[in-house]
Structures are given as C-alpha cells and as structure tokens.
Length: 274
Image (cartoon, rainbow, N blue to C red; front, top):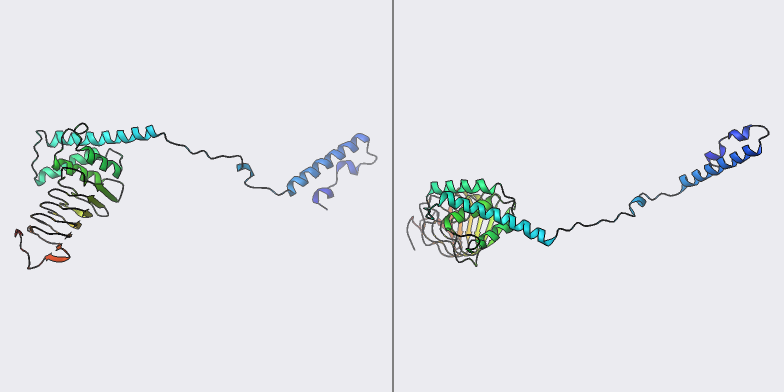
C-alpha cells in the first residue's frame, strides 16, 4: 500500500459525512491517485530534446570569396607601402641595414592582417600579375613574403613557386624556431639568411649567399647552391643534395654536400669556387 493511501483524509474522520463531503473526498482520492501514477511513471531525461532539430549555419560562397579578396587587398596594400617607403625609385640595394629596415616596415603592416598560408601563396602568384601588383622587386618581395611566413599562424608553410618566372630573393629571412617552410621550386640569392632556428626546405636550387649570417636552424636544398654559401654563418646546418659551387667565410656551423661534411673540413676552403 502506498504512502498516499495511508494518509487520513479530513472527510474520513468526521462522523456522518454529507453527500457533498463524500464527493469532495472522492475527488481528492482521484487527484492523489493521479499524482501517484505520475510519480511512478518512468521518465525519459531526453524527452525535452526530441523536438530540437540542429540547423547548420552555412556561409554563402560569395561571402567567402569577398572575405578572401579583402584579405588579399590588405596584403597587397602592405607590399605597396613597403615599396613606397623602401624602394621609392624602384632601385633597392641589398645591404644588411636596408634588409632590417624593410623587414621592420613589413612587420608593421602584416601584424594588422588576419591571413592564412594559402593567402601567402596567392600573393606570390599575384606578384607576376601586373594588373594586381604593378612592381615585382625580388628583394622587397622576399622580405615581405618572409615576414608573412614568420607571423603566420601555421607552423608549416608550403609555397608552390615552381611556376613563377622570377626567382625570389631573401626567402626564409629570420625564419624562427618551430617554423618549417617548404618551397616547391627554385629561390634566388640570400636564401635563408639570418635564419633563427627554423627549418627551410628548397625543393629546387638556390643561388648565392645561401644561409649567410644564419644563427641556428636547418636549411635543406635538394639540388644546387651558388657562391658564398654560409657566409658569416654563426650556427646551424646546411644540407645540399646537389653541388655547392663555393663556400663563404663560415664562422661556425656545418655544411654538407651530398651527405659529405665539407665544413668544417680540409677538403674545402672559403671563397674557393668549384
């Protein structure tokens, strides 16, 4: 017998109940029995969620395209500002102080842009489109691309540059620790200079001054490199899968040619071209 049935009702303890009181008593019993049945009925805790239907919010394609174009416009504007400040007459001399100054200008504009590695690659291809970017100067372009890569959110960046007609200089400048950059194609002069712990992979060849002034990290060139390789290199390693045409004045570090250590070593001498 349930606890509700044992409860004494006011109607039951009175003598000679009237018809009205009997009716009230019956109604109370009916209510109590209903409550008892409801309390004993199994409950489904997920019942309230059965009617909920998840609706996926989709972003229209044209909105995605507009957002991508807006980012590219900002990246192009930053490059144009760099040219205005550092290459006013479209003549740019590669000296360390000019490189540092240009990099600082690039940093200033890049920090204000929210972009991805894909946007960097799009910018590289836009460099050869005179309708989008009027001037391609390999030095400032390389500085700007390097800054974009150094400040990108991704830890690994792959740039497919094999179809570019112009070889970009200064790719990999100041590539920081825990960053990996892969270039599919060839690069120009000063590849990976002042490397700061990152890993730079060149699927093709690099020209002169590869790894100049690098402090730490690793450069892997799968084909050939030119003259002055490792000039004023202060640490890190350079691996060349093909031929090293000439070494620079290396301070410290290691340089390999086809898995053979050529610096430090007696088989190669600074500024000895092969």
